[in-house]
Amino acid sequence: MIGYLNGQAGFDSFLKTKLSNMYTTYVPYSQNFDRIYIGLTNNLERKFKEHNAERNKSTKAYCPWEIVHTEKFETRIEARKREKYLKSYRGRKYIRDTVLLNK
Image: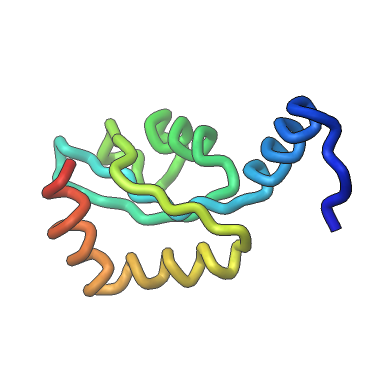
């Protein structure tokens, strides 16, 4: 149960807590190498910095990266299901045919 929120400050605090507990499935794209990466995280800003700082073994050779697609989920399980789909042939095709063409 959420309980009573004290004005705007209470709502802002609730919203910040709720959003910080969410998971993000994300797709960075390396235009220089025409490569996509698909991942999930609970801290997108940190992960994006790690990718571009060459601290991720899978992505360091293809810098720089730009985030081209994100989806938010309340649970890690939901985010993982979407990540697995996006990593499939059909998911990668969706990214290439829809997300990257509308970029």
